[in-house]
Length: 120
Image (cartoon, rainbow, N blue to C red; front, top):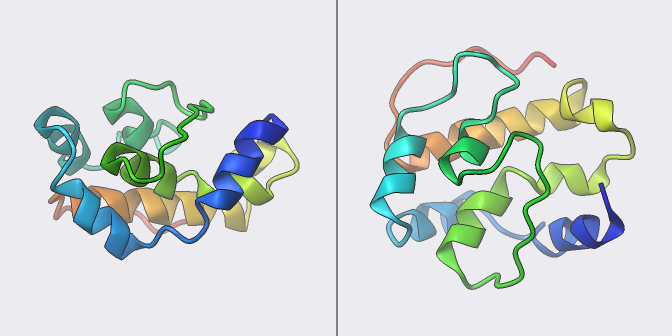
């Protein structure tokens, strides 16, 4: 991950789940419907990334923190701002936090399903 993206994530650290819930009503119906379908079958495929048309573990760069899509997207990415190794996307407490943030994002979009516990 580049330093520019890390800086973006650190700037987004104060975005809360309440901010995501508020922003959710302002994003496109297409993205919201995809998010509301919940997690993808394979744990390391990211439904949030997919909903926004980005490959999992991408470093999509947003600048406008007032843009609702930015708020919804970046919320699950924030833990990566503290990562120092690529494997942290898949193992350890940071990976668990990303997974929990993804689940919270799906729920904010209307998903009511069951999910496995974070276990990275």
